[in-house]
Length: 219
Image 1: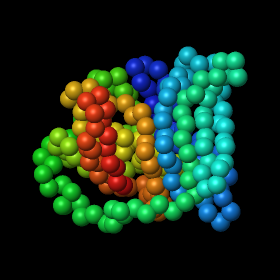
Image 2: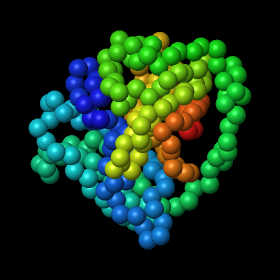
Image 3: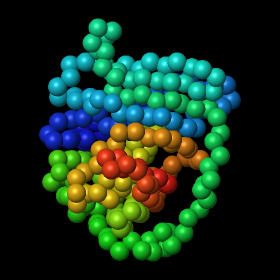
């Protein structure tokens, strides 16, 4: 899995893998497991080909939330790679309803098959192996995209990492003709039910500042 994430020739630790580390390392609250991750930031990339270090996770729990930091090095040269909060509270989701796929496709006039999409990513320095090549086809316009994503669910993992990375790729498609977007943060990631190995991913661009792109993602 980790060998399949090559950025500009280097093996870079995938952003979604930090989420897996956080959930796998945290202890669930009694009778109430982690169902939401909030205020996630990816601060510094971890390069397997340059770093001769290990990754560590630190947790601090207050009430219904556990803050985490994932870092390398020791106290003298500590480098934070990602941080966020795990929540045990049940958030009310306003749009947690089934969506009609044909309705979502309406107005999405550009269509790209998965093989062609990953060729485009490669021209921008993003070389995805099989574990990250989940998008089979994507429909999109200027502000929305709809991706058909299918990948095997990896055993012994808490999260379907390839599926989640495919959702971030579906955001990047909306700017792929300009410059490839690199994810920096997640405001909130909520789990309603277990994610299967085959999903539809709907992305809508939010209004943001001139130097910032923001998206709402539904699986």
